[in-house]
Every structure is written in C-alpha cells, then in structure tokens.
Image (cartoon, rainbow, N blue to C red):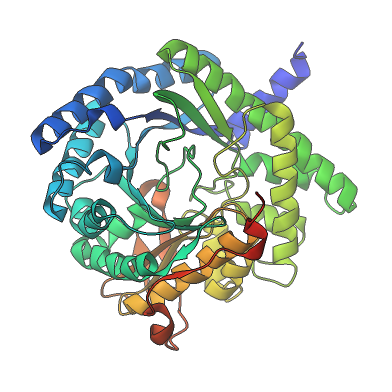
Amino acid sequence: MISISEVLETNKMIQEENLDVRTITLGVSLLDCADQSLEKTCKNVYAKLLRYGANLVSTGEDISREFGIPIVNKRVSITPAAIVGAACCKSPADYVEIAKTLDRAAAELGINFLGGYSAVVSKGMTRSDELLIRSIPEALACTSRVCSSVNVGSTKTGIDMDAVRLMGEIVKETAAKTADRDSLGCAKLVVLCNAPDDNPFMAGAFHGVSEGEAVVNVGVSGPGVVKCALSSIRGADFETLCETVKRTAFKITRVGQLVAQEASKRLGVPFGIIDLSLAPTPAVGDSVADILKEIGLEHPGAPGTTAALALLNDQVKKGGVMASSYVGGLSGAFIPVSEDQGMIDAVNAGALTIEKLEAMTCVCSVGLDMIAVPGDVSAETIAGVIADEAAIGMVNQKTTAVRIIPVAGKDVGDVVEFGGLLGHAPIMPVNRFSCAPFVTRRGRIPAPIHSFKN
C-alpha cells in the first residue's frame, strides 16, 4: 500500500521540485515498410506511423491530467532508416525524401521529435549506411522534428574510424547547412558508441532491430527532486548521502513505472523500459550541476567532480532498478552544457572545460552533450573528439556520445540561443593541436581484449 505521506511527498516533488516524466517514446518497427519503390516505402512509413501513433499525444495528455504528473514530451523512435531505405534509396537525395516523410508524420501526430534517422556502423558501412550518413546535413536542414544518430563503435566490434572521420565532415556540413539558425541541425545529431536499442531520449533514440513490433519506453527525470533531498542532509556522511540519492531515485522511478504501465495499457502496445536518467532543463532548480554543488563542489569541474558524479550515477541506478524490473536506455545523469544552467555557469566561471567534461563522461550516462564550439573548428578535430568519446565507451563497456555544435560565425566568448529545452550555451574553446594524421588513417580500431567473453 502507498501511504498518505508518500502521496503528499510525490505531490511536493511535482509541484515544487520539477519532477516530471520527460518523455513517453513510442518505438515502432518499420522493417515491413521497406519496398523497392521509394514512393511506396514513404507511403508505407507514413501510414504505419499514423496507425500506431495516432493516440500517443492525447494519451499522454490524458494520463498527465488524470494523475497530475507532468509529461513533457511525446516522441516516436523508428527502426534505423538506413535499414528501411536500403532497397529503394540509390542516392542521399532519396534518403532526404524519407526524412521529409518522417517529418510530415511527426507533425501530423503532434509529437516534438522523431528519432531513428540513423545508421549503426560499429564495424563497417554498407552502401546504404553511407548514403544515409551523407544525406544527414540536408535532411536535418529541411526538417524540424527529425533527429539523427550514427553509432560508430562498440565494445564487441571496436571503432569504425572511417565512419568517425566521415562524421566529423558531416557535423561540419550540418552546421553550415543550418548556419542561418545558429547551426541548430547539429543539436539534432548525435554520434554514439554502444548505442542501446531502447533509448527514449533524443537525439539518440531509435527502435533497434532486437525490439518487437512496437513498444512504449518512458524517460523520467528529477534532478530538482534529488537536489532538494540532498539539501536536507547537508554535511552528512557518504553513507547517508548515498542512501538519500538511492531512495529518491526509487520514488522518481516509481512515478515513471506508473505512467509507462498506464500508457502501455491505453495504447495497446507492450511496455518496454524505464530510463531513469537525471535529465536537466534550462529551468532554474532543474540542474544536475546543482546536485554536484549540493554534494560539495563550488562548481562542476572542481577537483572531485568525477568522483561526485560517479557516486551520483551509481546510486541513481541502484535506486531505479529496485523500482522497476525493466530499467534500460541510458539511465543515470546527463551532463549537457546548453540544457543545464548550472553547467553554463560553471563554463562561464572558468571551472569547466571540454577536457574535464570528457573525464566526467567516463562515469556518467552519455558523453559530450550539447557543447557549442567555434564555427571554424576543423572536421578532423571534431572527428578526434568523437574518437576519444567512442574509445571511452568501448573500453568501459558503456554508452558514450558526442553532440557537438560548431556554430557558424561564432567564437569563444559568444553565446548561442537554441530555445526551448535545448537552452543556450557559451561557445567553448577546443584544443587546436592537429590530430589529422591520426583520424585520416583507414580502417578501424580493434575491440579491446576484455570484449572476448564467449
């Protein structure tokens, strides 16, 4: 039984501490939409998305209203488009037509983002994969709701450096194609290592080939709740600190579990996973950085930051897995710069650099996320940053990602406004020493020795 005190506590979390369900993401398999004809493939894709997703937004709104739980986003993820379009797409322009179809369907459904304009090239690229990747700049420039991701490595396969080098060029081209919008296209593009098949968060969401026909995944968030809980035990020992985070994560995840089960029942689609990530927003009081400061750091980036983040991430997962049998996705703490006012403050104070953020990604959920850099940073440097993050993911058997935005016409000291959940960001300096002879080598970095567990 749930006690009245627990009900009141949850109400306080929602009303005063920014607890919300960040997203309900409907994953849909489009494998059966593939056809030799591009026109027929697009028609099939559009029809299937509308068939499965017609009630997604209204269902989310109904649950939010009835249970009093804010549900911020309703989203859709699809089978990686490089697979769906393999039979019919003969050029990057053909893939752009699929992207336009996806955008049209997303608009009709009323969702804010659709993920899965993606390719998984952990060990090598097929012709179809390369065509999709080369279409990304134009696809993101001419759509508003489509998100793209490319998985370039894994612990089992190593890192496809040909794909890494190509993605450095694609990020630069995407920035140029959307220069009139402060290179916003790059905010919808992420490069991953060890990408999970069931991630509900954008821009890296896609419906993996290991998934069923359709599934409901829910991403919860509550950095404000964790921060408030820690403020009540300020100065306590590590055992008390860990227990507080763990118990709070349990309560947050139970809210997500309730929403996920209800959405699954009403949509007639199986429940997949709860992603219990602490995902910040630009709103005051909804910051992972503020949690780190409450733990005892003057700013994220100070000595001890990586240890504090490791503690936070681990306790969030320990609390979450006790609250749901189906925890998946990324699950932990996100550290995006533009989406977290505390992170922005740390950058402006000189406490936080890209190099320190990279160290933090060794122990957090994702990677270098929503980082704005000067527009003249080279494609080779971006490829080097991607390679570094992929190596961290590969060796540590975890998901890492890079969502970097070389903002056209901007330099260190400037600020870029993305708006909404994407927030705003200071332009951060990047190490300018060249890595070109390294990233332009052909082939792949082999899998680490500990990957051989058969």
